[in-house]
Image (cartoon, rainbow, N blue to C red; front, side, top):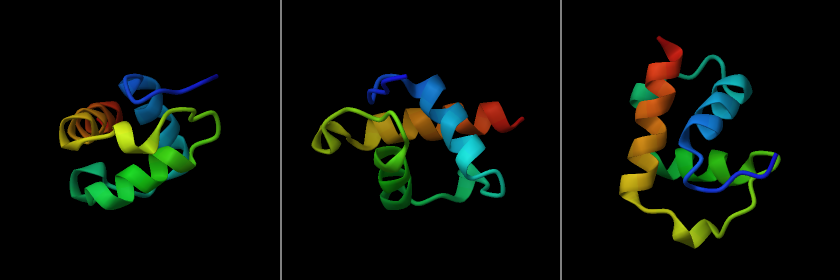
Length: 66
């Protein structure tokens, strides 16, 4: 599966599987950005990310955890 920054749900699921012990509520955006770009299947420009996109991914990940 090819992931883009706009695939927030798929990214959140992949992050939860890759980092099951992490509470996404307390993650730094710098770490989140790095983890997203390191996901297998991530194929987007790392520079296209911004705070709004990272926040959307974080909020989706928090919802998936619950």
